[in-house]
Amino acid sequence: MQLLSASCCSLNSFRSQKRYSRSLTIAEFKCKLELVVGSPASCMELELYGADDKFYGKLDQEDALLGSYPVDDGCRIHVIDHSGARLGEFEDVSKVKKYSIPEEAYDQRQDSVRSFLKRSKLGRYSEEEQAQQKAENSQRLTEEKAQASAIPVGSRCEVRAPGQPPRRGTVMYVGLTDFKPGYWIGVRYDEPLGKNDGSVNGKRYFECQAKYGAFVKPSVVTVGDFPEEDYGLDEM
Image 1: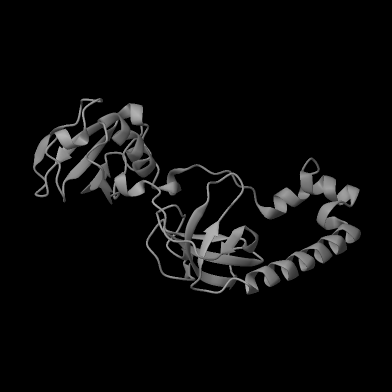
Image 2: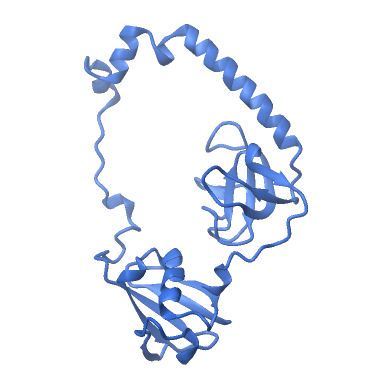
């Protein structure tokens, strides 16, 4: 396997470094890169650069092996995205137009969901439902606390979230958070399968690399003897 870095023309500051198998065909290699850069494999054009950033050539034979090209540790694969994405398009969310209405103006509308709930005494405007919701939240918090108390920090674990494949890692944080109510388990995954670096909304809960951290509910975490698995990402 060769240690290569990947860059993408549609992302300003993106750079990922991984080990890739020389036995991959270029078509297979593109499919793995799709998980890294986000560009569709069918829309990729690949360029190979040396460790000194010298252009070697294009990887343009779909059925050719990656090892048939002069790839070596430190080389860079540059992905040219022909899907139509613009440079930095997905990085600056300030460019996304948002609609907002002043709180007072919304409160005065008679055709809003809030107005309907008030008239019907439903949801948060129903004392009975509020009391029931409070009791349910209290019961849920008690159950989560009991589950979390059985998950020690530093333990190896496996996360089985609904609709997702099992993921293994190490428990890095157990407790309450500022970003959502309830008890959460901070996990450092063995591979970049997470969503953060151990921090959320500017508050750090534990240390790990970007995309290796995640917060999950105690109910989906099992602690035990879970050695690191090969997810195939080291070949990407």
